[in-house]
Structure formats: structure tokens, C-alpha cells
Amino acid sequence: MHRGHDREGNVIPGHEVDAFHPTHKVVLEIDAGRAAQSNTGYRAILNGALLEDADHLVLAVPISYRYQNNGREAAINAYDSHVELAREIYRSHRLALPFRTLTVFGW
Image 1: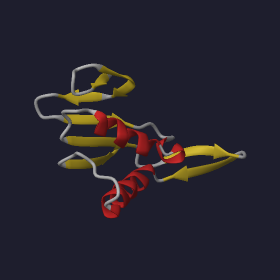
Image 2 (image 1 turned 60 degrees about the horizontal axis):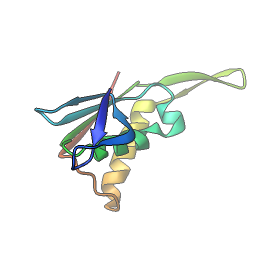
Image 3 (image 1 turned 60 degrees about the vertical axis):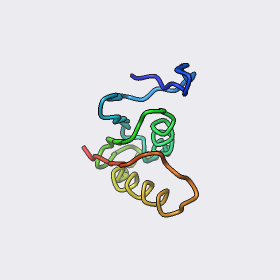
């Protein structure tokens, strides 16, 4: 885990990302299967955006997530959900993200 810092170098309380490469300025956020279900994609993007030196964000998410819903198996396509979220944010022009690139990686 890498802790986020503000411009003065102080740790931002409660702010952690899964990995950060300072030379290449890449943030990695890995979301578990429930990511598409609970909208953690928004949190992952915001966490990455709060890192002062981050130029690139990589979101790693499962292609699909299977779970039980009232005793029945259900599935969510987490990868497509995250890709669509990124597209909506960039299309809206309401939220300016500080990244040169945002990559969604499906596993």
C-alpha cells in the first residue's frame, strides 16, 4: 500500500492506493470482484487523483464477478462497468482528472 501525500509532503489520512511507481508516476488500484456492485470504481479513481505526482492510473478489475443473490447465482461484468465509468467521466467534462492516461485492465 502506498499512502497519498499532499503538496507539503504530509500524509493524507485514510488515503492509500495499492501501488505507486514514482519514476513513471503510475498509480495502480486493484479492485476485487465487488467493485462493480458497490461503485468502488469511483473511489479508486478519486484515490489515484489525490496523489500529487500521479500522471497515469491503472485500474485492475476482474472481467466478471459472480455472486449469490437470494440463493441464485448472478454475475456483473466488472470490466465493462469500469470502462463505461471512465468514459462517462471523460465525456462529461464536469470532473477534470489529472491523469495523462487512465487504463482499465481486466483479469
